Length: 216
Image (cartoon, rainbow, N blue to C red):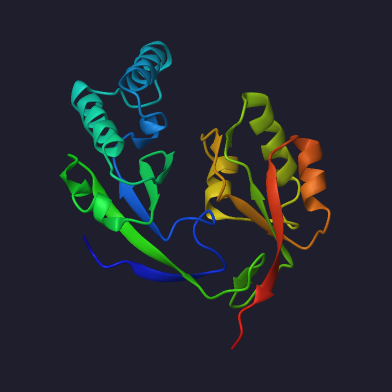
């Protein structure tokens, strides 16, 4: 396992975890629940949907077995950790890197990065080198219905000059994803943006923080 990269932050990851590992594994999103029966059910639904409509990759028995192996691996870790999945990405937040030293033994998976939180920035604020906006609004980790996603896309499509969309949120608004993650954000100069966004799609805003310039 490679040495973690220090990342300046205002808090530990999720106020609790010192390290984050991004492990890339095909169809990692099926590991949202670490239960074989739930993985099997989700794969069955996906393959049945593809058979009727097409448009996505069929999950092979080999990929399914790898997901079971990954599930079993995660369930046998010695210490608590937090798991976040999206697409082919599996983010593992931990205070015990040694628990994941052999994670690369999971077939077809690879570590993209290991970061370590270096708590040196101002708390309850977003610190940027050259900020262009005054606020950053984060969203909740949740599933969006088709109607909610359509409203969200219309809302931000008509306000392109007001908001700067973060990379993940931009993929959600312009792509085919329907799961919104808690690290998705938009930057803006509107103090009441969280209230207005919640009016468009109720309950999706997690918090809004001020953006400050990093000390030179």
